[in-house]
Length: 331
Image 1 (cartoon, one colour):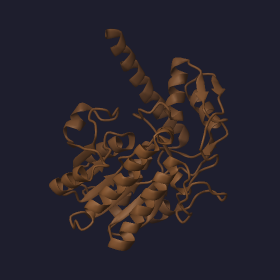
Image 2 (cartoon, helix red, strand yellow):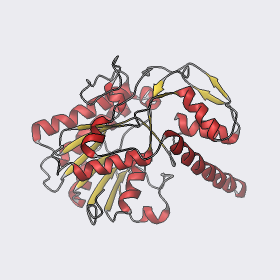
Image 3 (cartoon, one colour):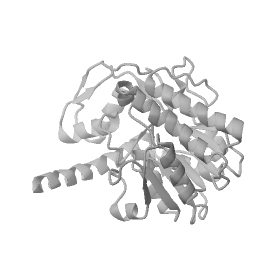
Image 4 (cartoon, helix red, strand yellow):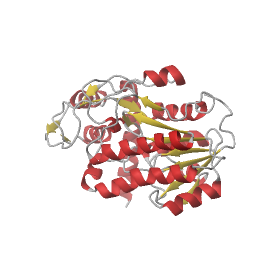
């Protein structure tokens, strides 16, 4: 990666307090970028320490509010935009589809529309998802697969992806989309997700409740590898004329939920203890990506195997739970 590409560049990150956004913010601060964080909340991220957060210019706003988005972009004039703000939990989108559509679809067109005509904006990366592809018989998904989500979350990502391409195709907007497998790693606050939930259950000797039948197939990507992909894409978009393109980011090694859970318990040195609920609704059974395009065009490679990533993640949560436990005892 370029050593001085980010020096003093103004970068807007929507959803910077989120799991992926906070990791990207931290990496860019370490590269001396000027980070502007757009989010509804502050001090929610488990990944950003106080000194790092103090170096982020926080703009409080809702991505679904066009005026807020316009004010932030016109005031700070970012050269690069990472659009990550979204409803990211599939179950929440299922229960509250209108809120998910406003955040994931309207929020995306707000970013694209405000950036349209802003010459200062050189690159926009919109976080799509593997869920944008919907259900296909032929796997792994490649970037030219059709976008045909059918559940609320999946549809919201299909729409955001298509909106991004429409703004490129119609208005020559310098935008790309990224489609990641399931991102995991230190600092994920959503314990409804299988990795932090299984780690918590293993560490605390609690029975893990698996919503599906355990046979769903997914691929998992360590958060730092995803961050590297986002940053590398931003660095190469203009030079390689990649505008309008989409990139899958994956470790290319799909695994069942049950196999993943057993790996986590093994790394934790515990005997697997779980119960299959088999209650998952509106979820695709087999879903995984090919990252051949990102590897070929961007020179991107995941640096973490699944085992190594899980080891690092487990150690981080051990420390987090210990600190959290000590604070509760003091209170």
